[in-house]
Image (tube, rainbow, N blue to C red; front, top):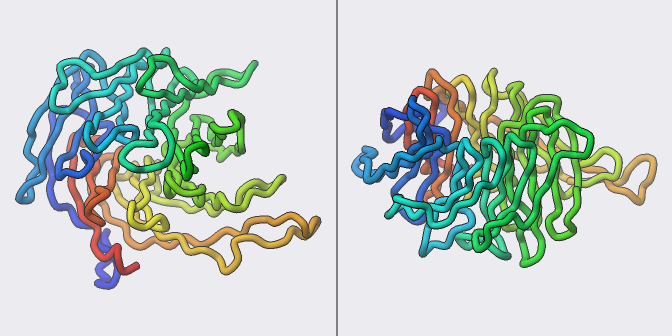
Amino acid sequence: MSSSDGTKPQIIVHASKSLTATVYDTKWIPSSSKVVLMGTYARGTGTIQVYQLAHGELKIITQSEKHSAFKCGTFGASSFEERYLATGDFEGRLSLWDLENMQIPVWTVKGHDAIINSIDGCGGLNIGAGAPEIVTGSRDGTVKVWDPRTTSAVVTIPTETGQPARDCWAVAFGNAYNESERMIACGYDNGDVKMFDLKMNKLHWQTNLTNGICGIEYDRKDIEMNKMVATTLDAKFHVFDLRTLHPKSGYASVTQKAHDSTVWCCKHVPQNRDVWMTTGGDGSLNLYKYSYPSQRSMPDVDDPKIQHGVPGKVELLNSTNISSQPILTFDWNRDKEGLCVFGALDQTIKVGFVTKLNTI
């Protein structure tokens, strides 16, 4: 349950809405008090629904039913003027939608041979330098980068030659601090985490966390990469310090058990990169803070010319049980610190508020 310590951030549910659909993803529409959800009806069709938050209630504004269920979405490659939603569906289609006219997509492509599990955008909404791009990860084992101005992938990261296709469950952009730099982090069902350098067009780093990667996120997309969190099926998350690459041991990291269940996703507070929320298969939300060590790196014992990283510490600020079912999706509002929206498998979406984020 939520801590009663008045000095700690409290996680408060502000509004709740029961749905007739299963929600897989939900996002704040940029610069608005509206949220959009993506999901599926019991009959297998997909739905996109837009809700307005007003006077403590979520009121539906518009909804659209489509042939295939929607798994994920992002505004990350869109402009503030257009605010197009990019979606990935169960048939492998990537589409852009104008939420004020959802009859047909603005742009669509059959991007993958199987479900698109995860999506992220960069270069839009004044977040990250460089061209607007979308990255998708699929059950077909590939990760693809798209420029919405063309219908073919600009980068395809295939399964390794001779290896079985691994289901890609999570993708994220990072390191987009100038026009040419950009990284993609990918998490797979076998616990592989891979980081690809799009500028150099090569694998930058990889590791294996032994259990499927449900969520992955850099603490900021638009800075020189600093930290990254990966969440897993086995009730753990891993924080990597990305300023500390060692040629043999890789990045310094700290691992923490959370939720006593699958940790579905991690979302960093937009106004504070050292604080993030995780969502659990037990229906709880956990708020964490990272504290850096006094020295992030130290000379290696075997070779003093090489630095090895020193991991920081993770503190649980608060935990609140919200639902009897897994919370699959979570999104912070970029304009109002602490405002958030999340969706659970009990067919509800909720808007919440986390207090005192500006004091920690």
